[in-house]
Length: 327
Ligand code: NDP
Image 1 (cartoon, rainbow, N blue to C red):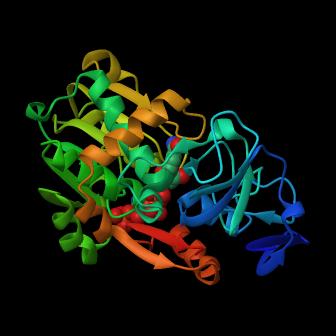
Image 2: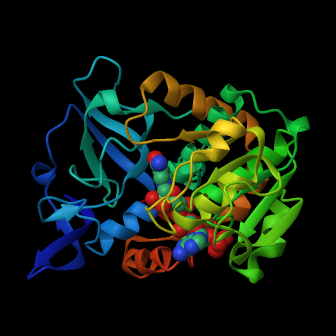
């Protein structure tokens, strides 16, 4: 038996309850994992609230990420006792996820827990932090270097934003953090932000195809009108790593920043990211993300807390990263 936060749907309304389930209720897969920690991402908030049409069938167990120990495996890469991380692959959406003491998944979805990283810290990183690293890698691959100028991070006090700031600052970039929450300024400075701007100053495009050049690069987890406002502000050959939609999905812009300044819009996806790239990103996180800064982002939670926290993340009220303890 194992404990899980089970979601049910009735008349279009999704409810949740903690239940004890037998192992044979778990979905098919070749690796059974004892989950020690999970986390809360924006997408988990959508699933917990029955939004976004992400879940196709109920009862459902959410949690797009988990870290734990392999209990049983018929997959060639894994054996009992191995410590593993899972992020993405639509686990927690169309496959039962990490909001349970046990999970059964495909072995090809797992990566090894990097040496020296606890399952708690792995989930403090989770999909949000992993995506922040993929954004940094995308900017580096484009040729962005610390001496080229300021890097803007939007949605700064959220999960992606917090990890992006800590990684970029430790790599020597001058980071400008955009937040809508004045109470997070000290937190953002401690993570390494050199300057903080009110998100209201970049949430509406100027209406001009080009503005004065401000940013060598940007990590954008907000999207919508914020992304539209940033593009005309990019420096010549600047790049935006776009990964999120916390502020909206619609992007109204012109081609002018792309064709007159050579600006690059780099899309970043974490869900179907190939395994070889996942391993690089996790190795980079253990090297370039200062663990003391990661620890400062953590809010600890249990399964009981998730319905409340799932609402809070959709309202933009979660600071840093939530780690769920599953024993
Ligand atoms: P969080 O809720 O932790 O962070 C989002 C932040 O965006 C908030 O903390 C807030 O920052 C800001 N924000 C929220 N609402 C608005 C708004 N209406 N307008 C402007 N800013 C807003 O979420 P995550 O960091 O987990 O995820 C961020 C985004 O990235 C989400 O859209 C998520 O779906 C996406 N994502 C995409 C991935 C991918 O693979 N492409 C993977 C992971 C996440 P502040 O208070 O500082 O202003």
